[in-house]
Structures are given as C-alpha cells and as structure tokens.
Length: 211
Image (tube, rainbow, N blue to C red; front, side, top):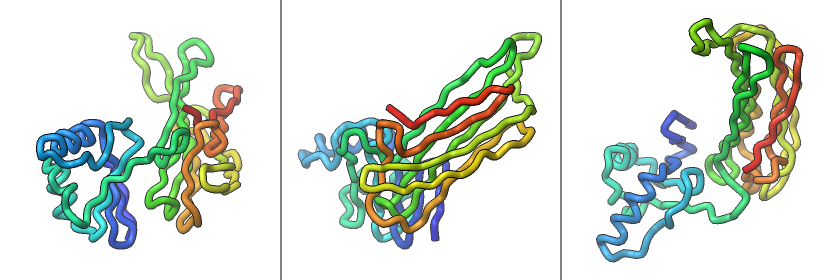
C-alpha cells in the first residue's frame, strides 16, 4: 500500500516515511541536547531530512505529529539526513510570469522521491491569472500547455518525456510517475533532473529544477 498526503507522509510496504519540517528538526535536536544524547540529525533545511517508522506503526506517527519527538529514540524509528550537497529527494521551484498587461501565469517544477528510489514523481504545473478592476488577481481560463521531462539524476538516469498537453483551463499539469526504480535517484541541482515546458498567451518557455 502507498499513501501520500499534504504532510509529506508516505507508506511503502510496512515502512512509513515522513518529510521533516525545520521546526520538527529543531525539536529533535533540543530533545537530544536536553537528554545529553548525541543528535540524531543535524540542523538542516526543510527538504534535507526525513523520519522513517520501519514497523509502520501509525500510533508512533500520530504521537510524533502531536509533538512527541521522543519517539525518535524508538528502535523502529530512524531520522535520515541527506548530506549529499546538490542532490535532493524533495525539491521544487516556482515563479510568476507576467506576460502581458493584467495577465500572468504561475509555473512550478517539482521532484518527490520516497524510499531511496522506490517511488518518484516529476511534475510540471501551470496556473493562469487575470487582474480584476480592483487590482486583485483571479484564476483565469485560457489556452495553456504543459510538458515535463526527466534526464540525469544523482545516482543514475531515467530519461522520459511527456509530450505537450494543451487545453483551455485555469490550471494544467503533467506528471511522470515511476515505481520500482532501481538505484538511489535524487534530483540534481544543475537542472538536469526535471524540465518543465510551458505555453501561455501565445508564448512559450521552459523552467529547470535548479537551486
């Protein structure tokens, strides 16, 4: 069974994996310092650490989400730090593009990998906006296009391209999903791992996942 939600939690087989927030990492370190134990994870950015509950105990996950960080000391719980600079299991990039007076689009590319290569998604998404007379922006139905491609990763390569999808919509996305990838694939900071192509208002452009 595989479940994924807005909290960055997924279950693969019997293992629950949870992406940690900066606050949760700080709380784990505070507990380690208070108890005199060696830190289980160093202070790192949001997308650099995650928690694994190896026996799949949802009660442990619930306790952690309710603020009981002491569960990290359980034998079945591991805090994993991604220390490979320039390579990330979770990363996204987004921006607004104002392409004509009163109209703009929001574009995003994203990479999610759970379980060290067992499951990943590469996404490209676009949303359209139009400015109202009062200056506020609202979602706007227009002709949009989006495509996504993957190429080289840290740990290997997976070269796939999803062709341009064009529809008249307020938003549109394209996703590459892969389950059971061999190796330990992570997005590369040089933009070779996720490439999004976008069309809007008679214009086109690409955005690479870089950081």
